[in-house]
Length: 249
Image (cartoon, rainbow, N blue to C red):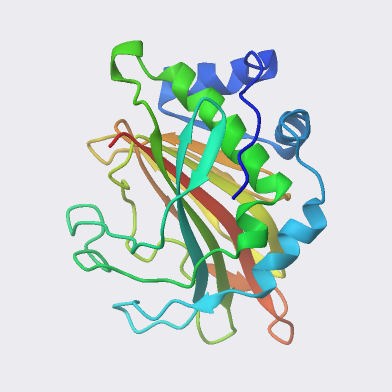
């Protein structure tokens, strides 16, 4: 993947998101705030980017036997606004973090080269790097972040609910998480829920518009998403998101 130019000074518009993350351990950012941030970071051709969710591979590692989740996966090294795609590798979570599907190396269909190098993807990685690096104490900042990117589609039918987080309320075993809505089609619910480290319920909100975003300090809160069901059982129903995790190696 071609590398992009180093970051400009942090965008002042990130201050509200950074403040919420510092105060609460999570932030809900509406598309009206997120879109301008990404555009200033170089995003363009969003419809082309979003259309790539129509070409994901079935997740064959679902321990609940579900066939409602499709995905693609890629890993990057991100530093100072530069993203370098890493060689193909599996996604791994311990059962401490994912008791349903963890404990094994899971090989998913890779994010295509065109989408890995897409201006929308690069803008998302660039913006996350600015935000998350700025929130990380200087002594703990890595030379490069290990970043994992997941394209998810969760489908629902009249007889089978779609489970965006089948493992339930969870942490991911990383430092920072972005969940960016790409598309909601004919679905009800899909409410994001936050809990503290004692699992006491906290805030909840719904990613409803493309580019609505949830951001999480994984060391401070649990998060999960309620099941989705079709509004009209006769029509396709799905929820598309991009999940990006930043972890110190």
